[in-house]
Image (cartoon, rainbow, N blue to C red; front, top):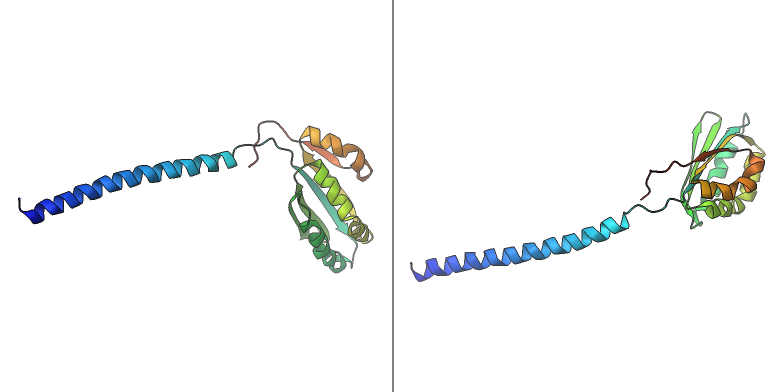
Length: 162
């Protein structure tokens, strides 16, 4: 074997060794990152509560009701306990899709939007209100929300939250 062939083989062997070492290091780095990702996505004790209100908007008042949406969103966007919040419409029926970290966040939200909600209720009525969440969280809401006559949905065990 001449010097060029020997140098080429040594280069290839050296490259293979480097690639093996690099691969092991990359796998370890990925495994470390993956374990952090798995830990971050591990199931948590679910305390989330969702409100499911349906509003029947008075005839001729739909545009006025829709104009309140951005006011609700602007106020709610500042709430650290709000997970999601948006309005949807079907004819004269409006629905607010809203979820919160826990019962305390629901109550904070209702206090925050009280004035705009009163304005909305001057041109619409709540025809149905569902409250969903774990039993312990719903128990904290039963008295404060009793006047709204909600239907309570207790979260079954065995689900998950990310």
